[in-house]
Image (cartoon, rainbow, N blue to C red):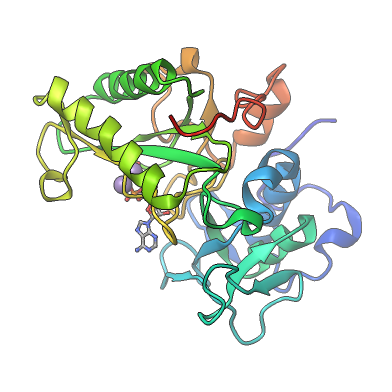
Length: 298
Ligand code: ATP
Ligand code: MN
Ligand code: MN
């Protein structure tokens, strides 16, 4: 049926949202997106979101007063946490504080209730926590980098990954850059995946030093793109595909077809207001075969 923008004004599909307290609390004031609006967005997008946010440890960016209030990354359980959110032992570090996870749509509605405006999953599942099932190259443009150059950077990363036999997918970050993501057979460990992504970042910086840097100390270089491979470490995260961002404009980190990248489709092009309609209008998911295309780390 027809999908309205998730401001919380459409009819409530039943029981799923009835546990929300203060459903009219404003999270994105400029756009008028409420807690209920976020919960509806998460529920509408659940089929797309689920593979990336279930069975994984999550870091939550919580903003109880909305995007202009206090914010904090929550990685462990808190007092009063909703029962639809699980606190699970880290299988590899059982003595450490348990991690957060969800398993169903009730869980993600509970994240909206908890003011989790951004969802940041690990790159491995809890079932195989030491073996990443995806890698990410996070392209971070410095001051003065044109959007077309960011697209060229993502395309360069794609070529290197594909030449090595991996499948490469791209999403907007909802911030300033692009994320190039490759699904992996969960075999190699974190150190190997980090070393591999570092080698890709180094190669980009070696081949086009005027364009790319791969060292954190040069990360803020004006006019250059930092190829951030440091997401690929145990306990580190990147924002989930389809996750909103706690920023003005209510942008979403949106998976796109490579051919969609253009000057007209910038990093904040997709938002809480247009994402559901976009997915409804597409005849296929840009990341449709993501998991089938998983290959072992080269
Ligand atoms: P942009 O395109 O603007 O760079 P981004 O989401 O890629 O957006 P980065 O600053 O590159 O933002 O950070 C990449 C990822 O690192 C984030 O999505 C998040 O998962 C993680 N991260 C960044 N800062 C923190 C933090 N303070 N605590 C926990 N995780 C963080
Ligand atoms: Mn980034
Ligand atoms: Mn980064």
